Image 1 (cartoon, rainbow, N blue to C red):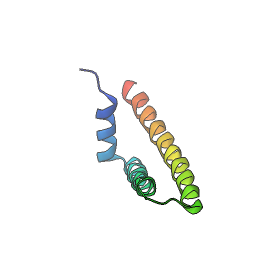
Image 2: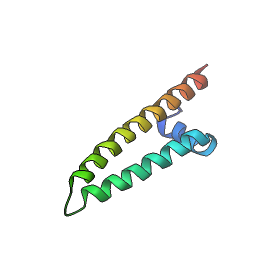
Image 3: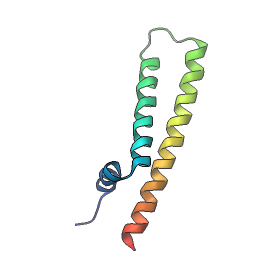
Image 4: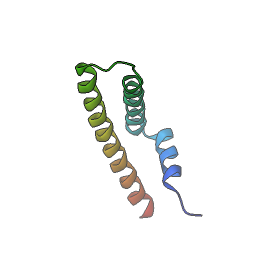
Length: 77
């Protein structure tokens, strides 16, 4: 049975502290973003923070993807 991306992700969460840290930070950013988006009133500071959180989430996701790809390449060798 082929190894799925989710299997690799779970393995990395258990074994790779950098990957786990990136996932935790991504989750924190996601929670903060949800708070802003669910706020009844959004001011200009919230809009700036929203943009920064989105950029941070993308950067974190890109880094997680690089780790996943690296792990997949090592596993296929």
